[in-house]
Image (cartoon, rainbow, N blue to C red; front, side, top):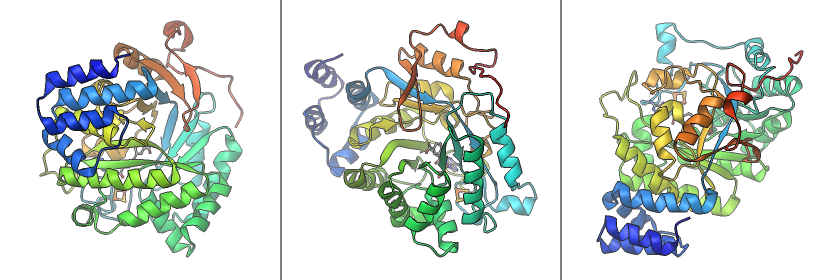
Length: 399
Ligand code: V47
Ligand code: SF4
């Protein structure tokens, strides 16, 4: 592993800017940078500079380990009462008549279809509808747990939770407790978008505000549940807005320690009301990952969500601070494919994920949702281990 002096030498080769070099000194001394310094990294830091620093930090924390997990998604509906301008997935669909709402049985059928797959997590996320209320979801969670007690259920953005808990006239904590008792294990990071009020009002005025998002995650952490956090970047926000967003998360993480992973989501501009806004470049994506790693010193993990970013860029991001590339995502995740994501069919088998990580000279390690190691694949003979579809086949369970 490179030493502090090796990395200092490397950084001085990329810039002579005294402010940037002072920031690097702070980071290398293990100290926290200020919001102003974060904005300076965005304004002036070259890809080489921020990337080298972020890679150093990633290696300090995780060596060459790159985590992935085996999961699948369930999207109960693609209809939504809200009207986020960046979303290709809202009530407009209802007007066009191509929306769906799953029945409980259809959702359970998806779970049943994984009976012979060694998946460890189901991620439930979708639009917001009045008929899909707190009790409806509590019943679903119970039924999923009855079928697969071993499966970790990561479910519902703070936006979905705020709506269903408000309609049930409960406090966030009581509503979350009810879902937790029914089987909910952790929260995904969606719905955070950009916390700044002005930008939020322009892109998603009618859904829950930043404080509510944070309060719901805080309530979950207080109940012992972990959660993730996202940022939707690369649209009409400024660098200062990105840093403000990360700063609020960093402050809360100091208090609760409940966040596992930060997931920057690149704004994609197809089939939504913000199609006129251009997408940012791959260099911007990598700089954004790197600065996230540097700024969020108390977040253990940084995830590149490959269905949105594309496989090759997700692979590249492993050298810019990222240490997790999510899961096998064997589903037909329409929210992203409609928005113009790279992956129209976001499925990677375990074998493909391992190969992608190994080709980046990193070590593939399968994890569970809470980052316990399930298996280190660096020394595994991939061809001999996997079945034709890349999953390890288990004896069929009768569900
Ligand atoms: O909050 C919607 C985003 C999010 C677009 O926690 C878009 O493990 C880009 O949060 N361009 C939901 N992004 C998904 C999410 C998530 C995904 C994977 C893993 C985890 C996790 C969480 O999707 C929304 C919104 O920010 N989104 N439309 C778009 N056009
Ligand atoms: Fe609804 Fe979520 Fe899309 Fe907003 S981002 S319209 S809350 S599905």
